[in-house]
Length: 273
Image (cartoon, rainbow, N blue to C red; front, side, top):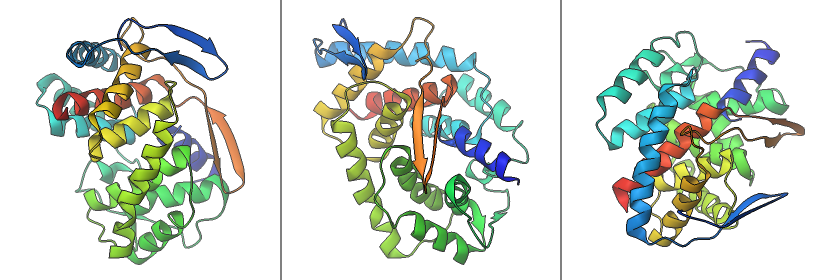
C-alpha cells in the first residue's frame, strides 16, 4: 500500500465505541449542567440509543473499525435489523487490510520489515494485531506500547491489545499486563473532560464496554453523550487533532464514526448500570 493510501486509512481508522441542561459555548465546546436523576437518565439514554440506531442506518458505513464497533454492540443485545445492516456492510469491504478484525477466516496481512516513521509507523502499529509474521506483529505492538501517549494514540494502544486478543494473536504476559494500566490512563483523561467530541465518545465507549466503571462516572459520560445528540439522531462532525512520531494532522473522523461510538457507550451503559 502506498504511503498516501496508508495515511488515508489511518485517518479513517482513528480520525482510524443529560437531560434538560444549561449549556454555554466557548473555545472548548459545551459545558453541561446535570439535573436529571438516574431513572430519567436511563430513559433518555434508551431514547438516544433508538434515535442513534436510526441515524446509523442512514449512514454510508464503509470502514472495518465502525463495523467492529457495531459488532461489539451486537454482543450486548439481539437486534435483527442491526445484524442485517452489519452483514450487508461487511460484505462490501473485501480487500481491506483490517478485514480480519471482523472476519476470522481472512488471512493475516504481511507486515513490513520496517514500520517507517510518522503516520506510516502508526498505521503499521495499529495493523500489527492482524499481521504476520507473528513475531514481528508482537514486536510492533511492544514498540507501540513503549511510550506514554494521550488522546487517540492512547485509545489505540488499548485497542491493539483488544484486537490482538480477539484475532488470536497470543501476546507475552508483560504486554497483556499493560491493558488495565492503559485503561486507567484513558479513565484519567476522561475524568478531566466535560465536552463532547468524537474522542470523548471513543474513550467512553472503551471504558464502558471493556472496563468496570463507577456508576457516577458512567452516568456523567452518558449525560453528556445524550445531550450532545442532534435532532436527526446523529452527533454531528467534530474536528480532531492527531500527533504521532513527529507528524500532526487535523481532520474530521466522520459522522458515522461518532455515531457508532456513542451507540456503543449508550448500549453498554444500559446493559451494565
